[in-house]
Image (tube, rainbow, N blue to C red; front, side, top):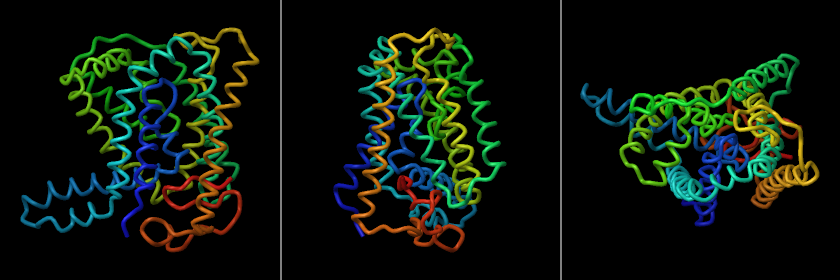
Length: 333
């Protein structure tokens, strides 16, 4: 059944929000994808596309035809993927020129809003698993958070961009793009390639952009398959790790820090905390809106996933704080 126009428009908006987030150092596009309920749809679809390409390359020379590759391609939600990609591209080009300079000039206040957004977002992976969290899960999430905290706190460096470095940096950055809690822009900033990449986007430097895209394609293909496997086979573990990553990534968005990521004494505390609360409230409002929308559509607990059957041969457990939502849906509040 064809999806309504409103669904495509919503996916365009989701893509625009993801693209905007990726331009801002410290906030992850994967985090926004989780909040807006499109994360697993995109990762799963991308995984099928990568598998389809791999099967095409391996089967055609052997005379096996394209049947297996076509079966993989059909499982991708192409409408959602294209809508999100179009929204991402348009928003990234716009935000690179408008939002990035604003964040640089008003870093404390901008980071305060994003800090509130990510803080509220920690609930998303935490509540997106049907299994109860055990002591080991909390310890693992805490360990991941600590590692992320330390890595994100590394001071920025400066390196001379060349094609090989740009390809490698793009491969790492795009992996962070699809992983909630890790910011591709922050990784570029740490490597000293954030400003050259933003300048290339603004100047329409096709050579640099093409080299960056090649690296992003390589890194994305490898990492997406890993994520797809984790979400399919070890969903609970993936959510535990993502929870830790989101918690640790708050280090990047602490409002009171210098460009070299050292902290300074808090200033203008009341207004900054107010902005944090606004960011937090925005995420809560989005999740509540998503819940209300699902209720109107009659999507109850234990809804089957996009393949028409629940993970592991049955639907998610009904009710409970950790009841897993349908693929592509935000968690229950």
